[in-house]
Picture 1 (cartoon, rainbow, N blue to C red):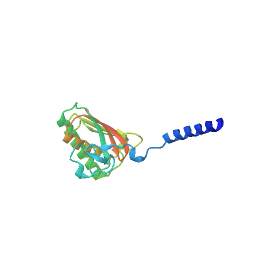
Picture 2 (tube, rainbow, N blue to C red; picture 1 turned 60 degrees about the vertical axis):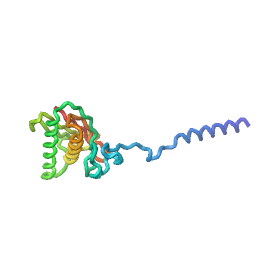
Picture 3 (cartoon, helix red, strand yellow; picture 1 turned 45 degrees about the vertical axis):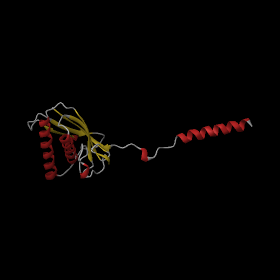
Picture 4 (cartoon, one colour; picture 1 turned 135 degrees about the horizontal axis):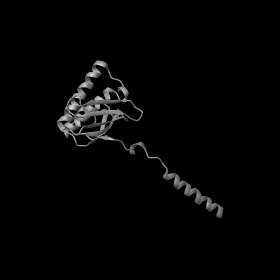
Length: 170
């Protein structure tokens, strides 16, 4: 009798601990959402109609940035650097096509007389492309246009993958 009750207690205890180890479903898994479109999961296509607030996701793209403004640069100089860099990237993609960034790092600035440098580089064993950097610049321009142009550090995502990091500095 004593052996039977001991085995029942062990079985019940085992069942109780097994019940605590049930995996949580995907519906409870956390995702990153676009600040400007709270129902849009970052890395999925952003509808142009949802771009009326703070924009970290690039419209019509799966590219988005997570940025931390540093506020240490002249706003007008940051704007000039980003717009000239974005235009140069757009021309490059139109004339030469998209492809991996040479050497894994892209730098734009100082030669455009703004005193500001935009830099982006590969991370997580992924390669940045000129098109993704252009989309990241577009997202930064949109965000800063609605807030303030400033220095910043940022992560670049293409879909669900972090493909780069960057810095806007002097």
